Length: 161
Ligand code: HEC
Image 1 (cartoon, rainbow, N blue to C red):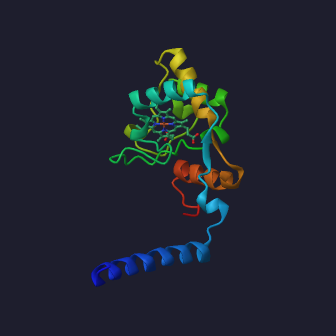
Image 2: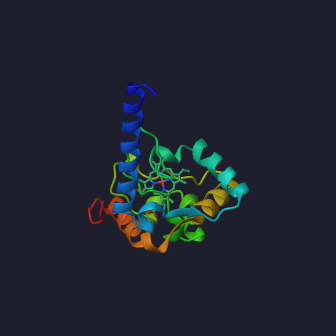
Image 3: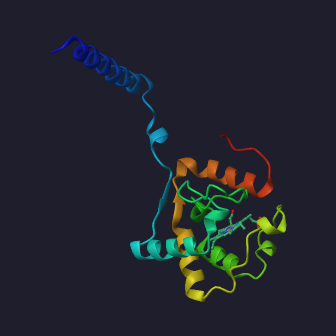
C-alpha cells in the first residue's frame, strides 16, 4: 500500500471513529430520534386525500409531514397532528362552512385566511376531513403541538422551538 493511500485510510478511520464516539457520547433519547407525527388512514384514503391536498394547494399555506411550499409565507397552523386536536366532525364542518372564520376566527389579512371549501363535492370534503382526522401526534409531543397551534392562531410565542 502506498503512503498516500495509508494517509487517506487513516483519515477515514479517524472520521468513522469520531462519529462512533460522538453517537455514543451524545446518545440521543428515543424521543429525539422519533418523528412524533403519524397517520391512521388506510392507504386508499391517504392516496385520495393527498391528491386533493395537492389539487387544492393546501401546502401553499400549511405545512404537512414537515414540508410546505418554499414560497409559502402564510403563518397557518401546521396540519401534522391536527387529528389529535380536532375531531373529524369539526374538520368536516370547518371545511364545509361558507365562512370558516365564524368557526375559527382569523388574525390575518383576508388573502391569507383559510378559504372556504364549501363548494367542493361532498365526497372530497369527507375524504379531506377523514384524512385530517387521521393525522395524529404522539402523546409526548401533544402539548407542544397544541402550543404551536395556539401560537399560529394567536400570533403569540409560547411554544419552545
Ligand atoms: C390561503 C392560505 C390557506 C390555504 C390555501 C388553506 N388554508 Fe387552511 N388555514 C389557513 C389559515 C390562515 C388558517 C387559520 C385560521 C385563519 O386564519 O383563517 C387555516 C386553518 C385550517 C385548519 C384548522 C387548523 C386548526 O388549528 O384547527 C384546517 C384543518 C385547515 N386549515 C385545512 C386546510 C386544508 C385541508 C386546505 C386545502 C384544502 C387548506 N387548509 C388550505 C390558511 C389556508
